[in-house]
Length: 522
Image 1: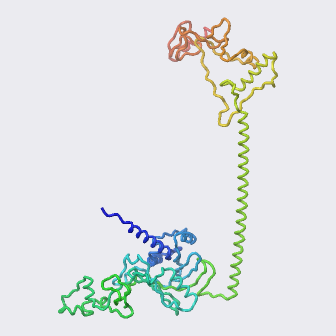
Image 2 (image 1 turned 90 degrees about the vertical axis):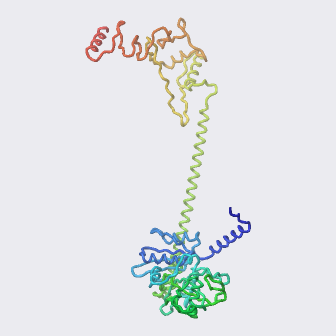
Image 3 (image 1 turned 90 degrees about the horizontal axis):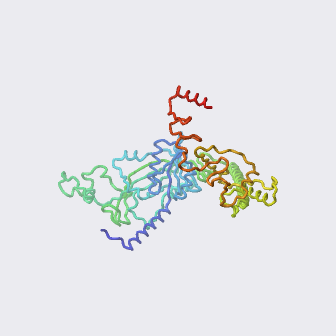
């Protein structure tokens, strides 16, 4: 098992992470994207420009057709994006617009010529490009930007702010692997854009010795003496026989990666172009982010009167905008006030309705002395009967009206109907008689709690007046499939006549004979 990290190691790693995050947030970051239809070549030029701006750019940024510039501006703030580089294409020209967030300025360049990375690689015999070169930002070199002119100084400032600044006292030379060169031509007013790969090699020794130091053994079969190997330009190709001159030889302040690159020793800096290559022409400079007053225009020039008139129009436009904004805020406040008023009224109505429902529920409280299952109408009938017994007269119709109980919400107003029971064997059906309120009251006279009404000379198990009889078990009663009043009828047996039973017959003459017999009986 590996050893656990000590407390000092964890603290050092945390400090290094914090410093890296702080340094990463302070450097400029760039979005490189296109607007509109640009074609395959311009799209590849945009991707090559992202490679130049690495690692402080969005390499895999996806752009949709429905995205507008405001979408990128809204996203740029939380991500710490400071610059945009926008590519567009018209019928005649290709344009590049570097812009500073969030309030500009925006520079409009026309791309007069451009060459892609793949074109540069195909033109070189030996190219030097690997992923390790893009782990650190490139070194920016500006040339001939000291010419007088507001537009030239603004261009130089814009390009300088797009790349991180370098502190020469704390810089590690091993991090510098690439170089971006911008050269301004005051005559043609064009900017040459180049992207190079850096390589540092020691000088003061022959190339044969360099090969030996790099563990590359040259072919010495044609040499007669070892001194021939130490002589310059012997047994080497044309590209290797290239001589380093004073313009690319310097003294290294630090130890650089590679054998022989020692501090305070002479070394040569060699450049290999990576690409892309562009020739830019400045068209105009706009004050804002893609819009605003024009600070410089290379084609159109305006007089002082035209500038003043343009400023007046802009001021008028701003006043109208402020007026519309103020009116909109007033309308919003009015709608909010109306909404609050409607809400207040709704709450008052709900409260009032609940109070009314509470009063109604108080009236619906049941009498604790009422018998279980007794309806209010029966209670009114009992009061009418009590009045008859006490006074000896019939009460008026308006004195004891039938009270209807108020049903609470959620309950069914219709009570459940009781299931009718069929009478016993040999008993006639229930007599359906309509009773008046007075008769119902007479029958209820003398009724007490737990009292069963009995009549003289009658059994206590029978009801008066043709009700259902309760007979002994030995008497013959209804069986399965037997109708009311039928005796001796079983399942599958027809009605009997005079003690005779006939089995079920098929349809035909048998049925007609029974019908005749039944008719003669009647």
